[in-house]
Amino acid sequence: DTGVSQDPRHKITKRGQNVTFRCDPISEHNRLYWYRQTLGQGPEFLTYFQNEAQLEKSRLLSDRFSAERPKGSFSTLEIQRTEQGDSAMYLCASRPRQGAVTDTQYFGPGTRLTVL
Amino acid sequence: GQNIDQPTEMTATEGAIVQINCTYQTSGFNGLFWYQQHAGEAPTFLSYNVLDGLEEKGRFSSFLSRSKGYSYLLLKELQMKDSASYLCAVRDDSGNTPLVFGKGTRLSVIA
Image (tube, rainbow over all chains, first blue to last red; front, side, top):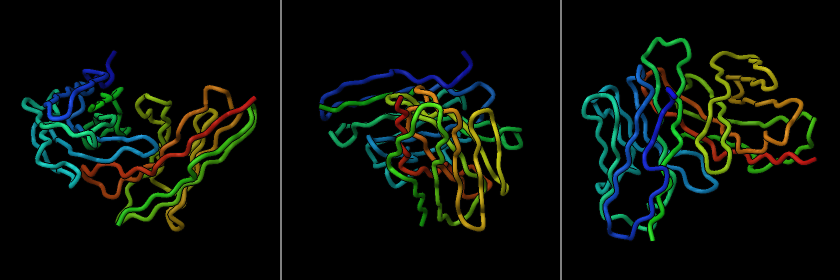
């Protein structure tokens, strides 16, 4: 399977705990995006990377959130001191290099986070 | 600001045709995307329009009018498996900017 993968698919945690999610993009894609989606809403942008550089962060990304893409391949999203309001589906998407024939974002299956 | 509007819910009959509209107001424009999302799953790419006109791909077609800030997704010969949310998204410039999504239209296909 050469699509975007995410791990874990589901995470249940208690308020105040830290969680980390992983995303493995399509191998030839150099751009990677994180989104958050709550019930009845479309995905909302959190942050994105081009190669290993984090180029933009949304105002939604509080200081409890941090993302990395150390070698320009997989990425991690960490949430510290989780709150119930962090419960959502966290989606990762990858996008090919500029100039690609089909310049769109391809989403992974998502990590569903439930904070109790 | 960025604003993308689409109807919240629609219902259509198996075998029929349904049109899902999307209007957008963004600071720039570099493409409009439609995604399909089944409950609890990730969005899957359906179509991309950057120039005015109709793009056809099997049972699915998407139309764009940039001057009107308007797009629609047309689904023909509806099947029960087409029951899903359909997300309209806009990219507002030519760089790395993320997509801005509408809230999605939940389509129910009934027998």
